[in-house]
Length: 321
Image (cartoon, rainbow, N blue to C red; front, side):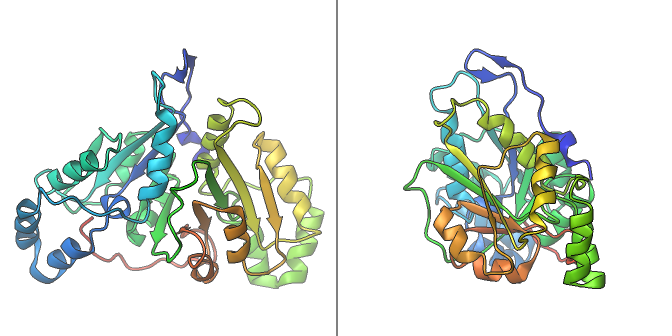
């Protein structure tokens, strides 16, 4: 999967690029808490939902699961003539019901000015048109469609973790296989077991793995990190993987072949990931397996990447955001 094609090519002019280094397309249900209004849509229908949103236009929406991360990323633009990061809203609302979303963006002082409204249709096509390095949504079906179309995407899941706005450094953590790498190794593990997986990885240690669905996001973050002086970068990345020696070497060689730096790496050998992500202080963690995320969500905000052999297709379910 060549997800790297979505990384923006930027030329530095002054203190910022002509286009942002990192562009995130976010669904309104990921940015704000739309639980109450979505309940109106599901129980009473579109017309009642539209009336409800118009009647509550002056009532700001509360922050949603990605609000803290978005706020911290947009803060990187402070004092710069050109933005390093752009966040665009891609919503299933109509432009009429979306007015409350814009009012809430202004109320919370978020620097979001671009948006698309698709009235019930999946908005991932606009994420691609905006050149997004990541599409964040609460919709499983929308995220699956985006990944199938080559767009780096993840589904935010609910978290009991405390908000991390009190620290300014942005910390992003990734699983490896079927997230930043392809699922080729997981296919061997699923078909033949652990010993066959280890043997294959040792034999292939000098052969870089193919790109996974979030490779383009990681590449864009790496470019963004290069803007800042060494030792003063406000973004930090971590690889948190169930792999252990001797399968670690292929991971390192793959990253080297891509020319991408990971700041920290934890090879867990199957131990639970949650405590290590809490120690790292991740603002968000991306993983392809829900059984890992059920644990990590207790410690940090988490996002599911429904890709690869561990994820079977689901029937599309209607949702309005």
